[in-house]
Image (cartoon, rainbow, N blue to C red):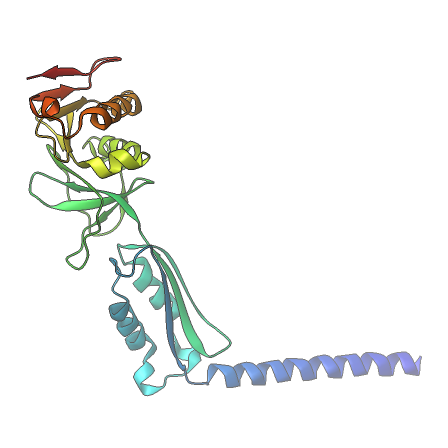
Length: 258
């Protein structure tokens, strides 16, 4: 019986000692000065929308890195709000690692389309339909849509299905752009999408002066497939140069006018 009591007392003392050691270690860790900030940004190009130096500077100010502030005083919630408030960041996280450094990981939005409204203000659109504002610092090479588009430019990311954008034609332009991007030949041939006053779509094809009339987005893959066949066969020839319009609106044919 005495041995059992001693064993219980020993376990209790050991447990208390571990708690004390943990509390002491945690206190020491929280009082340790933050050593620095490491920012890891995922994007497909060397340059992009997100200004890394600017985010690091803001993060340093929040952490009071200049005055060697302790790890326990770092406001991770404020750091996360800084990242979430950036309209060009798709997702991000921030944490303090075992090396006493604040680690920030972020992924930048990847656009496939840029759309200009009638006021010549533009937004970018991802393949998933996320809309985000343009930037004076970076303009990636993507398909451009312009013409009869009326929409506000957001201060943060939005979506093509949101009520303010649902009827603007951006979603239809995205459908056309995504179909074009599936074909390397068309991607290299088509530079712009134009929405005319009838809300029908036209394509601006490189080195082709004719108006290419797509119409609506019904069977857009078939329409573009017919266009690819025509361009592959006649692009650069005198015959194609004589046409005024190439109309893809009709089934199984391209109606051309001279």
